[in-house]
Image 1 (cartoon, rainbow, N blue to C red):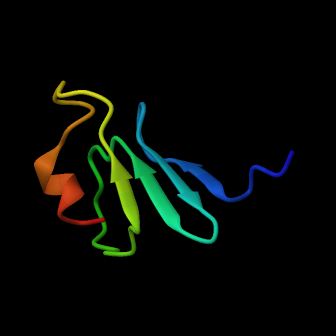
Image 2: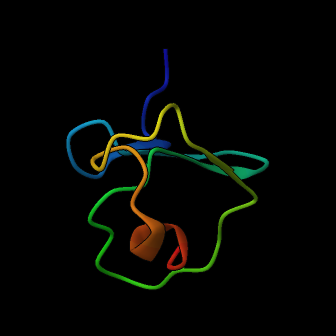
Length: 57
């Protein structure tokens, strides 16, 4: 299994870089990459739904 395209940002925040760039629960994202094709929010807890981080991906 190749996992080199998976990045764990913090806690449950994950970025997967494949034919599309996917973010799951972006939290405490510090850089503004604006490269997300899809953003998945699993639920509304503060550490899974961080509007400031969503605006950066």
